[in-house]
Image (cartoon, rainbow over all chains, first blue to last red; front, side):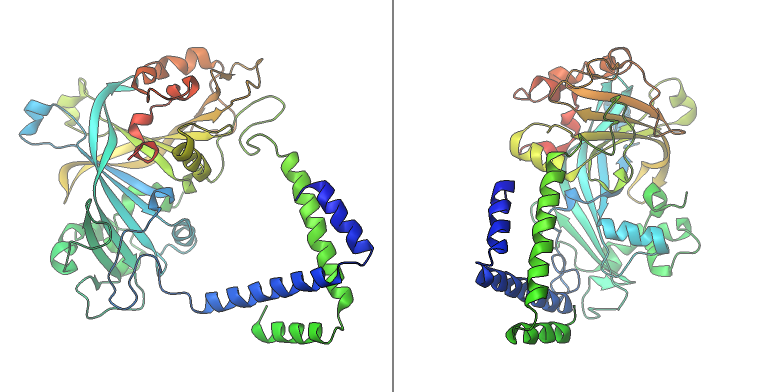
Length: 219
Length: 219
């Protein structure tokens, strides 16, 4: 609203000619307050990521605007070394909600509903002005999505357990998980995280490789 | 406001007993609108990062909660290869404001006031379940901060030119820049970015290594 319009509005109030408008505005504000009050009461568990009835997980939209916890750079060290040379071949970038970081910094724990998205990307290596072997991300290969669950929900789902919901998605489909059983498909790669975790973590949080996430570490 | 209180409020309106309260609320809303209108007019240029009088730049607080554009993983390929093996030795993580990403996705350009923070981190390499050579960030080494300037401000400062403000900070001091002259200290490392930039970029945006930032690239 421009200042001149505000002036006219103000003048009209002074002339007491817009009583109906005033009452209308107050009614509108009241109605909005009631609506948002109801909306908060019925807020579902991580609404955009979990199907409340089945526990099926999907990759959240807009996660690339969330802060990152860290990036894992993978350089293959095998027979390709001779042909490819020293290079970064894959990136795993981990995103989470800002409120999850704030909660962890305050309490040292992941809050119920925390969503961790690990985006798998192809990486390319090139010589740059900062060094001869520098990797950067290119295209997406797929996603791992983890959802913190402190309440033991979805006991019948093969995707939930050990305090988290676990899913993998290929790049072609960010809605339907490719993984079916977290015990067989997810836990084995996370077993080595346990002894690396901060000693004072709750057991469920020890599944996360927090050592790569400076933002979660005490200064 | 609880629902019961809203009900009482509503009832009072119906009884036309709170005309003064209504008028008071409208006056408050009007006053706030006028205040915020003035505030927008006098909004300083990237207030928390640039000293408006000198053009001095500082590392923004809370940048780790901003989204990242990408991470550059540096693996030294030199005489240390024989002793250190294949490894990631340094990370450059680039953060920017969410509104900068939204603007770039819409227009293909960095907006006036865009802040890019390149955080330099030490990196550690270890064998993990996902591969034998995996790097992750550890502690902060320093920061480069770039501020987009479409207006040619601070012509007398050695830190501003070519459409940007440029500064480097060592890890010990995020407020006082270590660099004094962007032409000598910053431009040389960004020269190779020009031919790698999207052809339709404005000249000033070609200083940025956008090839490493999937979120800015057209699908």
